[in-house]
Structure formats: C-alpha cells, structure tokens
Image: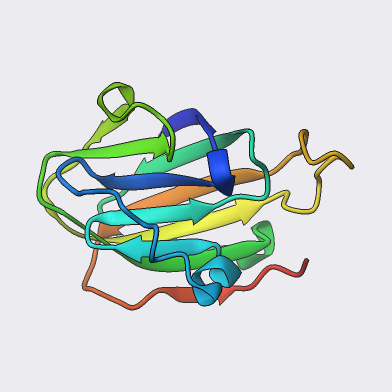
Length: 152
C-alpha cells in the first residue's frame, strides 16, 4: 500500500505511465467530470472535491480484490496501459521529475478509483474528510465504467 498527500490543483490529480505525455486537457468532457475520471493513453485523471492536498492510497494487486460498494460513495474503473516500469502520481501542477513513483511491470491494468467523504467539506471547501483509494491489477482493456455514482 502506498500513501500520499497530493495537491489536487484544479480539483484533480494524475496517475500515469512515466513515459506518457500526461495531457488530459481535452479528456475532461462533461461525462468525464460527472464520473470524476478522465483518461488518455497511459494517463488517468482523478477528479477531487477539493482544490487542496488530498489523501490518496494506491494498491498494486496481482488480481482483482472484492469490492464492498457500501464502503464508498463513488467508484469507477478504467484501463491504464504502462510501457515503463514506473507509475507517476502527482497533482497536475507538480514538477514531474520530483513526483512520486510506484514501480510496476509494464502491461495493461484495470484501475479502480474509490472515493469516500465527498460530502464532508467545510463551508469554504478547504477542509474535509474526502479520500481517494486506487487499486490496480492486470486485466483486459475496458471503457471507463461507473460502478457507483455519487449523490451530490
């Protein structure tokens, strides 16, 4: 388990193949904003409810783990293909060379993004109990799929 505090500038952070370009500017469509997740080749953008440091955990798994939907407010899955031996996790304005790396074998992964505490923000939106948990395991390619939609 990898734990991070990521500055979610512009209400998002990235997890991506170290070799990918990382440009999601056209990927944040209305549908992507609704599902709180945008994708491009080798890059996944995770939407957040705060424009602050947010807690993020990442698990690299051998196989899919059971999912308890009652534990989460929002859950979405997608594919992340890696060509390098590292994933980078960072805020979109972080300095890429200094961003955290997670070693992985190159390949095709399912990424499950689980969101909790989305409705716990302070009135000014600066404080909250929101948290973001990512799980990755080898799996075939899929289209982004919302397993549980948040109720705002």
